[in-house]
Image 1 (cartoon, rainbow, N blue to C red):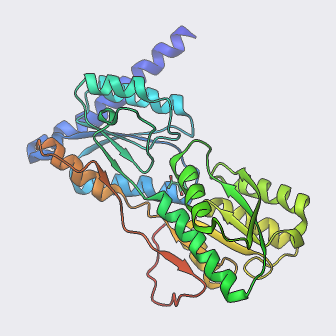
Image 2 (image 1 turned 120 degrees about the horizontal axis):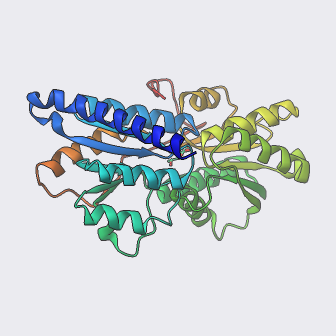
Amino acid sequence: MKRNRWICGVLWLALCALALGGCQGAERTGKSAVVVGFSQLGSESGWRIGNTASMEQAAKAHGFGLMLENANQKQEKQIAAIRSFISYRVDVIAFSPIVETGWTNVLNEARDAGIPVILTDRMIDAEDDDLYTAYIGADFLAEGLRAGEYLIRKADDMGAEHLNIVEITGTEDSTPMRDRQVGFLQAIAGDGRFTILESISGDFLRSKGEECMRYLLEKYGAEGIDVVYSHNVAMTLGALDVLEAAGVRPGQDIILISVDGEQAAVDALREGRINCIVECTPDLGETVMTMVEALVKGEEIPKEIQPEETVFTEFDDLTGLAPRGY
Ligand code: GYE
């Protein structure tokens, strides 16, 4: 056991030496001595895979070395990755926190080591916002509001008297889950036409989206559900499969509202199988690396940067919409 750990340690050191060595080799070009440690939370969705690619491409374009660690959905792995970045004294740490809580100790360690930390994509619940340098990610509350605003428009358009909603949420205690839910509820609050029957977590995973939909269909029956609000496309695609296998026509018999905007979802929207997609862009890499560049030059950067996002619905003309790239 000990021996295995020792071998792993040696392998890890060798890998890091390679990563850093690569950067040192490029040191001659000037700025490529910069190393960014990036802890990605997992590979749970097309969005996430697009986000990892965006970070890799941008680091390359800026000539930075990127130490990328994928935590496979485990917070402990993210904490361990951040600790390893601290011990290798990377210039900047970037990470996408899987959940909002539990980061205080490791972020104190980064602060004590004088390494700036950029939160990418998701936020943390920090009493002390000095624990991180900046947050670069979406306004999830606005996303939830857009989902609710679409539903109000749809209900008006249908002349609906009453609609029963089921919600398939993302990972509990994560920022997008919390704010997409709150924003949606805010938008429809006080409108007596809507009832939320149930809210269950599908953890942003396609397989769990399927499971949730199967459970909801069994419990309420297709006639009992008018609207499915799903917090990401992966879960929506899972739910679509289950609905169609049960002979339900999503987009017609049941209104489907999703968030993210991967190509597969835009295709389904065009086919009339999804009614609304609230956009959430994974292309955060360029902004992150531009901020890294500023930080290593000793410049101040904004505390919060949010990308511009939109919404695609069945009411829009999507013919000119460019391929999504993820
Ligand atoms: O919507 C989902 C992914 O944090 C915004 O995480 C991100 C979310 C995204 O798993 O597909």
